[in-house]
Image (cartoon, rainbow, N blue to C red):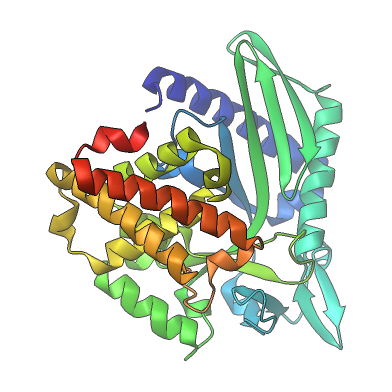
Length: 348
């Protein structure tokens, strides 16, 4: 569990740093000012899935303005290794100079460019950091803000006993009207939203720039829908947090089971089980069933994405020994629980 006061302190500082950075980025980079739409707070902290044993880190989407009627999602799944990636074709007849800066041409067709969006944010962040001499003052105290470059633009904030990282990921937000019509994706996602009572406002998705994964294509991500599926389902978030805690506690090969994989494995349980099953009184059963389900997925070598059913997340684990080691570890944990019935033994 995370200390709530600490959480509020981090949240206050994060918001201040972000608001300061964005407003200065808009001042120093006119094209960013023209294209910035909003900041979307994603990641485990804002999903209510953060656990105390991990470093403070925040995933934020910097959402660019681009009207859905001026873009078309094309060539989705053309790359068999990245079936949830697509090109975004520009359909606006005349672009502003700022808009032109985040496009590229390929065989006579104009597309939005993930790498150019990334570079615009990076350039803008660097200008601001130089201007503020890597220092921000919040509530009378100074904090050092630097950038170190992994896949997104990552800010590092340090000072007064606090330290955290913020990933700024360029994105475009679309509502469901932009889904490729009659596609497998649309036929799968719309009924899923109907089943879970996802409101019209929440029926949106993001096209995310992960330029290290692909310089030309965007990854599609249904974060708001995911949040809605997990919303108000009794103990489901506790189950996900317990699984992350168990992974961190056991360490070793289990650390190779990244958080999104664990969450996805539990989400498949959410799709299968009635709402009443996730009753808080049933926490131990829900947790153990979810561990068994994870074990089963590892044995079958298949844990599919909830939205892209043809994407197997386990394909990311190249070393089969990692899967075998995790099967062995989870098998022992489940067998011991089945024998002794003491859930605390799971964490020993």
